[in-house]
Image 1 (cartoon, rainbow, N blue to C red):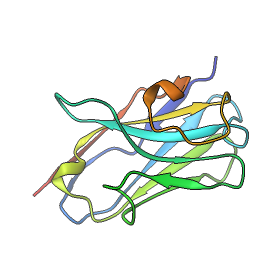
Image 2: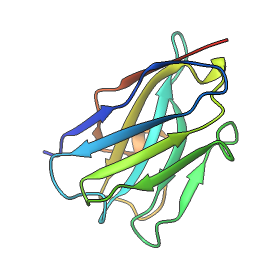
Image 3: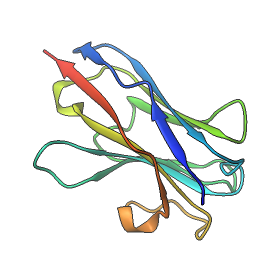
Length: 125
């Protein structure tokens, strides 16, 4: 069973930047579709960004495109989410996710098999 650990969450101000990291228990990110989701209190978990192992093609939600960048880390066990110009609406628990059972980025949580435990991002105005 692959384990994912999210880290990097913090409390920041509007306009600040933050980088989240997802670390896997094995070298999965070179052979899996990986994604980031977030869940704010009282809301459903929503897609933020994702990347395929085939061609490293990223996809973004409309609300994050242009501000967030998803990328594989320096090893096959890490993935990053660079977030810039953070807004209060970005406040949520952020989760990384991965699956080996697809070759394209899915935007539904059910598209992913492995999940991190989540890391809190709080953006204050």
